[in-house]
Image (cartoon, rainbow over all chains, first blue to last red; front, side, top):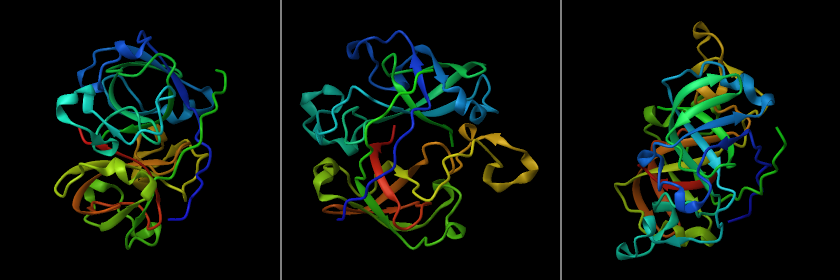
Length: 133
Length: 133
């Protein structure tokens, strides 16, 4: 397979929350009640128009602290289940460490979205937001 | 907000299907019966271990033909609904043109996954595969 080079990924914003170490991070959004703020870079703020409190949004994060060279993991750290390929898990380690969370919007103020369900560290870069299907 | 530079995104594979123009592409995976193949670069093949026919997988694509400088769109091209911010839609245009599809695995052969539900063009780069929650 020939190597394809992809263009630069933009950081559209950053998360502010109280999750300061990996030990404190819930294993997934679906088991998290953590509240925090998505601060969107003002140059992308126009793209938020229509996001309202009460919506569920799909947010993609770039896990800047994750390993990119691991292809097999113990799912959720449970060694009794044996090793799996990373692509059949939600492990944060993977060639492109992108996390996908479904978050509830609690409030919108300009370029800041208050959300519930965070499972990523304070300071994690945001790369996309989508409507949930 | 200070600018954060993100590391290089890797292309982990490429899609082969019969969708050759944007006019032929379904608007989303949830209304697509298109079958095709995800060819994963052999250097990442180990990460597929555990993926089996019948599973639903979440696949992230890099939409290499999409505009990156549009922040407002008519959702699904319907002008009667007015303009929305791209982050409250599933539009392919967005600062980081990443598409998220939930696909049914029909067969696995080495580094090739036959899947159903494709809504992206033939030749689209693949950047991640995850378990569906």
